[in-house]
Amino acid sequence: MKYLGIDFGTKNIGLAISDEEGRIAFPFEVIPRNGAEEKILKICQQESINEIVSGDTLQGNKEENPVTSELSVFIEKLEVLTGKKIILQNESFTTGIFILEKLGKQMNTTRGGRPEKLGISHEDDRVASVILQRYLDKINGVSPVVEF
Image (cartoon, rainbow, N blue to C red; front, side, top):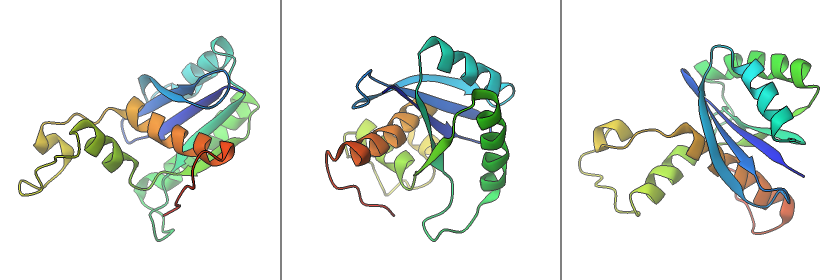
């Protein structure tokens, strides 16, 4: 079973793909939101994707944020285009997990602020791989997944 992971952002969409066995997620590509549905359809066809997993943008308290309604519209279009039901996976703290991993867990918290202020680019494909790996671990029973 091969999976595609999605990190839906305000400007770009990060994509990750699993191995053929559906056990390990790999960063794949970052695409602009404009025309993303058609690009994802092509990727699904070229890469023989069986299922699509998207990060769920609901906040930890299950409240919607400005991106939630945009994601819902995107998912509806993508489901119609691909003929696949999109699986939602909690994406809480995935960007933070990526940043901590990238910094070797030595982030200077005294400087504060967003990742860009710390000299880190937000690599959406890598965040998509964290989202997808979280889902793969859950379905494969690799480790207990804490849902926030």
